[in-house]
Picture (cartoon, rainbow, N blue to C red):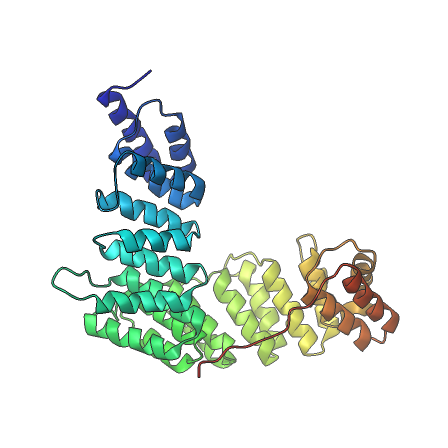
Length: 391
């Protein structure tokens, strides 16, 4: 059995090289095959691979191995941070918080990991509170938030919808001289947009010294979500003049804006130009959005024409969009009726409810009742719509 220090070094080098090259699964597999006692450097090399894979079980095992070897919390801050990262990315927020609280010293990585982990695992208010705790824990050796910490906190703001917290973070970013950083600016645009202030989102965008595709895509989506279709189209035109090539996300935002504004002609032109002019093949969600636009505008003939031109195999999502837009009287609608009424599909409650409504609008009351009966038989319920505001 290999036990020499030289063999441990060779194992560690191989694991580290695999992890750094993005081959996380291979790095974890190599660690599992290791027939020598790993040292702290070996563990620090494999833990980032566990975090990338979300391999919480392996992370816990490594953490336990380190504790059994006498490596208590604080003995190796690098290992503590690596384990914390595994817990945060694996969704084990309670374990991460316990480890964080037991760490005698916390650097900016530890604070950022906790803010990010709480924000990404459905605890946005706790993430914002963690960021505030970081600011209040001030002494000569206390770390200050960096760009990654701010972006993590802004993600929490975007999730919680707390406009006040967003403005406070924006002020702090400007005070620290981080407001002009591209990654922070993009996060601010997203946060303001999701908090309901499209004007501030655009103001941040306009003041960014450098704008990338994320900047343009985020502000365009913000304008679209807030019903400012003309502004979204103007941003698209300006983006083209600046020589920035749009991607599928930008087109989806534009098509969504056209859908809600009733601009069917513009939506069809954008869909046609995606692949023919810009080399971006339309995906299911793009076709679905155009069909929805046609249905909302009552132009069922154009919806049927667009439906027939879809090159890919028609999946459930596209069928539903066509049928719920009013196409239940067409061939696609008949096929979808069979799928729903014969129980061949397993859709959500919202889709069933839309189908039932579409059948009712078309005067097909028996089919509408049959869809509702199918929902009851399968115990499928439509989630109640809700909204959240800050008081």
